[in-house]
Length: 211
Image 1: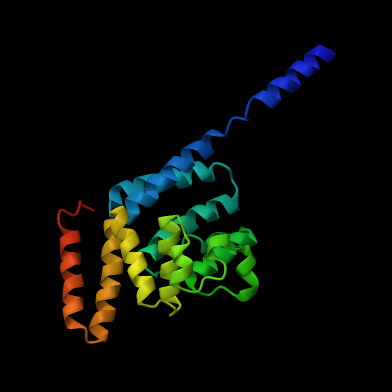
Image 2: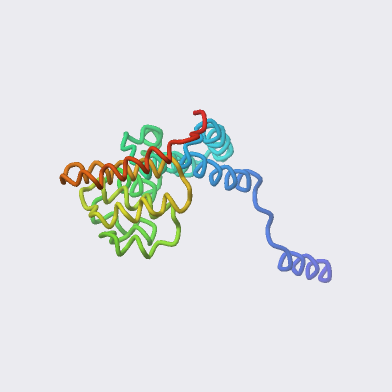
């Protein structure tokens, strides 16, 4: 019996635990959803989000499903669609403090006491210098959008966000951030700059996939 016990212990130490199927499937669906949404491929995005939510809902964990809904809200925010996060609110009462803080961060209503609940890259977010330190382009767009939503986005923030979207070829995000830049240029009376940005938007709109 001792030998059997040792063999079992060695086997457990030598092999990594197998990840649950729902987690493997959800990870892939989330990445595909984000890329499709940011690129403006709505049919693919809708299908992948439905798959993502279904896989996560199988756990029966409100916190997990809340994170999925916040992923959708974050993609909307990243493309400057500031509509309410309707999918999250019914789950808020059972969601962990980290998810509630993230929801308030996206909405631009985060309180100072909640800051420690955020992911490290979003804490102390102040401007363009903080964005430059973010390696993940999705996180950079989300952070830039929150700065814009809360009235703290200077021209550098808009430029960084537009460049990030352009580098990734995310059509919906490109159009959103170029549009924000064009609107600011028009408000400042910079007509030629606004026209240049509008021409870039027209270029990005060519061969747009069917929604």
